[in-house]
Length: 582
Image (cartoon, rainbow, N blue to C red; front, side):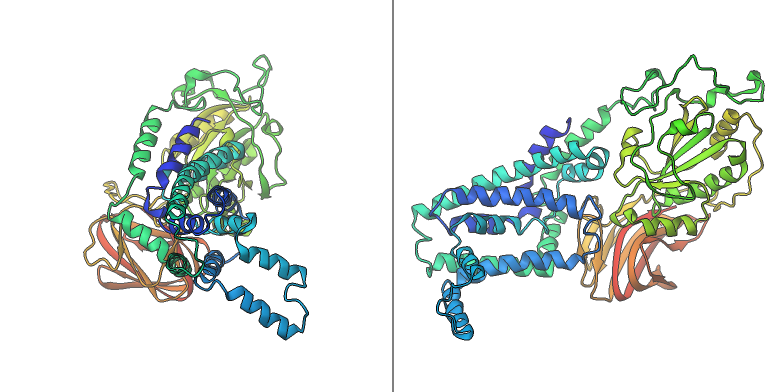
């Protein structure tokens, strides 16, 4: 619960950020136009908070609604706001419709049916449910620019649903508190001046126009574009306050027990494997102790167990590491669109082929970074594409990830025959050291490797780091149609939309331009489109986007330099998530 106070404060600060601007007219206006009850501001803001929590869980932390088109939710929200706009602009619309409906259906009473009675009560807008619907309508299109919100979404929720949910609720309540105060103040102001008394008065008409503008902005995506523009200009950027707090916390965080050999002993988590240190389980080493290099082992702690794994590939699966006692186990956390993970896969497959019959079991724990990586068929396709034959399982709920207190893709944890973690490594490289640790625990000699690797050259000069395109972790974005672009910066052209995870478009053509310093450039994409790639003003190649995965954009191995790439997309639709470089 260490993030709980920060989550609440982050919700309060979010009200001052550009991303909240589209919500303010609806929340304040929805309260100010009805002064007959002081409960209305509270109902609207609490409904907004509940809607944010629910739709964050449904749309961003699960796959339940992953197949529903992105545009559905913005049209859904825009439609509700539009109906309220019409009711403010044309307060006699419902009575006229009711009379017309009565004539058409030849009813004695226009409110004869139960459904009409419900609609009539809704139209009156004095009750509980209209306020709930108005507040909840903005949940599906809420796009926070708070780094704490994305920390909860990307780290805390996957690690622990309950803790993540509590922090998410704290964030939503902090946001709702300030929104309530603003809405209540607006209601008191209009009540004091008697502005909302006349249903046909100028004030309600003005609020109706404002609601209409918000509805159009939501439907067209200009609400997020306007917020992004303000952020890019550095206006109202209170997120820097949060980021400083988060950075300070990160710098003072101690290493986990797996990463810190001095914290040896039984893990405090009940789900960890209990090791009987008096049990006579042989190391299996056929090499004399004097020839073993103990210095390569960087930890010695009980191995946390595997939890919540599902959809096993190349195996019937394991419920616990106790089933593998007496084996050397390599736990590899990866995700299939991560270029760093992809580069390690040939080594893992090579070790599996060479040492599986000698007692090595590799467990590929697939922990998704993006929502599309939670789909089983996508992981299946990736395993097939990369030729992996060792066991792979999905950790969509991050239960095993959490149990290892892991924070990285890729990450490897090597477990000996007694069930203790003896070696770990994060990222790429040190393959010879990892293989030596494997063979020492197996008690066998290292075998020759046939892995073919990309030759980046001995003088690596990579200056551009991974760049995310979604609003959650976006950096160096220049906006639309930037004329001048410097190294590590990017711009877009055309009718793009965006959310916290990606930029996307279904009105093609659109284009994406970035300047980078590397020998290789890759882009995580999904869609049904053709990408025409230009490097430094010269046509380079054309590729087909036909699924969610990593696509190579440029490659000149061994030669590092600065390049400007422009990708023009044509076809049906395109989604772009993140750049990676080598």
